[in-house]
Image (spheres, rainbow, N blue to C red):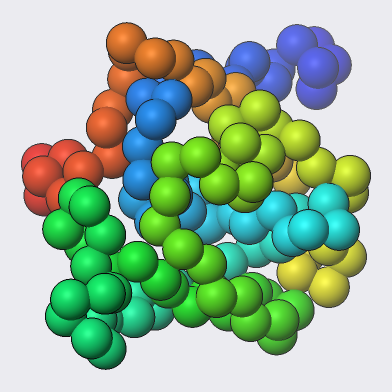
Length: 132
């Protein structure tokens, strides 16, 4: 048997299409930069509300987070459903993988096999993490 026959096809994973970007990034640990590079996420620090009246989003959580990638870059992102990065992650748009981050091939295969559906899949809520 060759290695191609031994290798199983990637398991399909279903995630809801319209989930908060913080929850999605915590799950997949990937970030598309504006230049189109796909970075691996090292740490995610959710920034608390500095001004309680302005820093809370409509869903009641904090609006921003700081991402640190494996290559040392830092991004400050906002928690949104319609952001550029959210669309890029759902549609799997990226130009290339960051060579410094060293995203493993298995993670890219897992990401490629993830399907984003509107009425099917996990919502990636805090309760889902407690159950898994």
